[in-house]
Image (cartoon, rainbow, N blue to C red; front, side, top):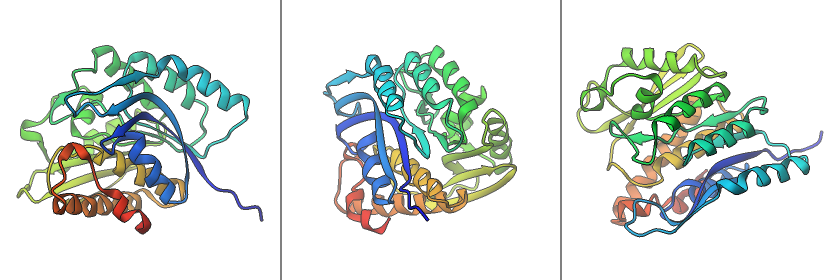
Length: 276
């Protein structure tokens, strides 16, 4: 029997400070014994949650970067995509992932709290909807799920399980893998202490409830997504992956509050990598 280490291509920006995107996903995935292979979409000094940042758009380099991978006959067990900064980038990513036979994970980072990010144009939103057909797993938050579904964001971001089920099923029908996780949702029974991740897995639904701490900490979604992707590449089922990701994020959030860490500094996941 020949041993083979699994590897995943990660398409996202690389940010020097703030613990988000590739800077968070590479160490998390690596700690889970999956080789993390970055495809950077931009280079930033700090993420855009800081007042002053430097950014170098990497769009023009993506075709040659991917060409090099192909000429070297590199193979990956999956691909994961995060924030994409332009319609052109979405097209380039579509060209990259279209030939993957399985394990394409798409985190459609488009907005939050009922608002699409100012940098996201109408054309980009339409392009992201087109990208869904390549997804084996889609992990939008509620804002993104509504945008991709073409429906209004619910009042105060509160939605029933039945409405989540309909939305998730409709989104799953647009993907090839028919698996969706709508993340970080405020349940309709909300008492302010919990959030849920709503799982739709090929017709079956399940809810993973987590303790709610503070909002808007940078990189939280990136860490969650990285754990889920690595777990699935490693052979775990979707519910197991979501539970582990949610538990890991909560543990990191607790430690961030203990450190009184500014929210734009991200999650102090380094303290717990050995547990992955």
